[in-house]
Amino acid sequence: MAAIAYEDIARAPKALLHDHLDGGLRPQTIIELADGIGHPLPSTDAGELGRWFVAAAASGSLERYLETFDHTVAVMQTAEALRRVAAECALDLAADGVVYAEVRFAPEQHLERGLSLDEVVEAVLAGFADGVAEAARAGRPIRIGTLLTAMRHAARSQEIAELAVRHRDTGVVGFDIAGAEAGFPPTRHLDAFEYLQRENFHFTIHAGEAFGLPSIWQAIQWCGADRLGHGVRIVDDIAAAEPDGRPALGRLAAYVRDKRIPLELCPSSNVQTGAATSIAEHPIGLLRDLRFRVTVNTDNRLMSGTSMTREMALLVEAFDYGWTELQWFTINAMKSAFIPFDERLAIIDDIIKPGYAVLRS
Ligand SMILES: [Zn+2]
Image 1 (cartoon, rainbow, N blue to C red):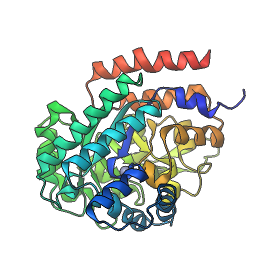
Image 2 (cartoon, rainbow, N blue to C red):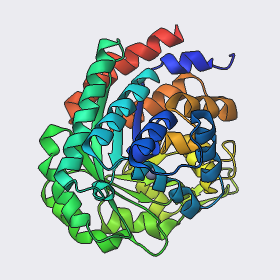
Image 3 (cartoon, rainbow, N blue to C red):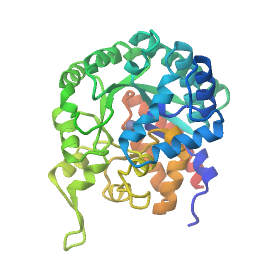
């Protein structure tokens, strides 16, 4: 079978669970917003600035990668800016053929110019609503669920968890913690996770990206995470082929697979930060073969110069995947979404399956 064309992947309905709002701005928007507040940028040419972000993020360390966020976060400090960035995010995802996306951001990082946590959330939700409405008018319907992130090195997780629950009926569907893993175990935020569980709320945890199995184990067995943000290092608990040729799963890997715990894998992001050496050698190949609940995600579209279409195209190229695998990733993501079960099912049955059926025929 000939490889699937990029344009066809662009047309396919896609579902995205792991995308950062402050990692997906349009370069031109950064330039305009920075100009308005006098924030200096490495370049004021949109093309050049876009390339700067990708290069800086590809330097090989997670810490350096996180530095690029100083610029995006700096221009996201007013309600107008947040609303614009969120609207453009929805439009860009819809234009890429994404039909369902969970986009996350950390409200505590947007308080520098006097906004309250609630005002930050309200501005972003308003922006998503703007973008979703405009995309629908353009014939590209998309649904967006918002996740609120707490920074793992900070001490506001309980406050952010309560903020998420407060906005659960107006678009916030889950909670997350993010930031440098080393030295900041998720168990520092146990109170927040226990609160969320008592509230019957959903959460994912960035774990097993740069750091290995202990981080994943804590996220699941101590914190009770519904999903793993990345989780790619679970491969460290899978031994090379036994004499019979089948890889052996350790107890944690077996648990993650048995419980169908979703892995929010982000191939290009991992290659950029050095968590994987190349797309072809990315553990997603093995994890898919072993039928973990694998999902494909963008992480930071600006820093990785990527999109859902591009991530899927890279996997098609590296692993020779066809529509069967792309549909499987998409349904995995939709099954693992934090919106209600009946709404997930409706998107799978009414949009995803018919969309792939057309492309296969
Ligand atoms: Zn992430």
